[in-house]
Length: 224
Image (cartoon, rainbow, N blue to C red; front, side):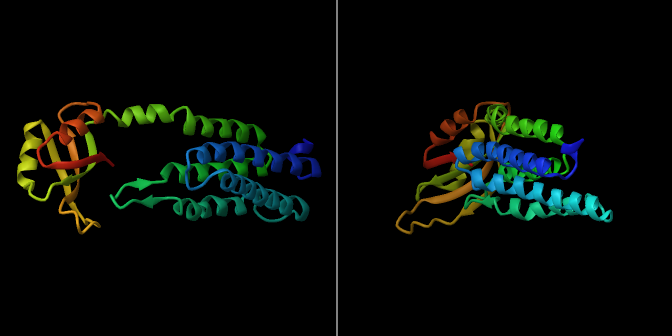
């Protein structure tokens, strides 16, 4: 039970595991050029571990206080750091949600290590790493064959929007959430829009992109 109590050995083991597991999780994000990478995940996991260690030390040495109170503050406070990794692109696309969730989960691993729950921390870290790596292909495959797709298009200056919408509907696609985008290039007379396309059946998004790109007047199209 020595490694369950706050001793020099248990402190060293917990902090070392927090650095290692946080580094493994952060390495995966860093290789994908995400906002929070190797050092960020290490710091979050190690910091949460230290906070939980401090809380257990206070409870063990002074015999007073709630042994999980400081950990509860980490669970809520990590949301501010995770929120900083979420950005909205100029095409209203949200990015960084997985990174924010990963930071929150890494803090959970740190808390488990800090209180000495090694088994849950190691298994939880492995599960988080698996979700962020091995399951990404499944997630991408699932999203690449849905009926709904958000796209960004640019119409040539002389191409009427009504004709474009009519041609899209003739191809069996429904249009919704149509919004006009500001064109930063004043010398370019094209008009930019973001919209949602809904097909009658599940199909590959690349096929829809090629189908829309072939419509007369469409100068550029990409999925958001």
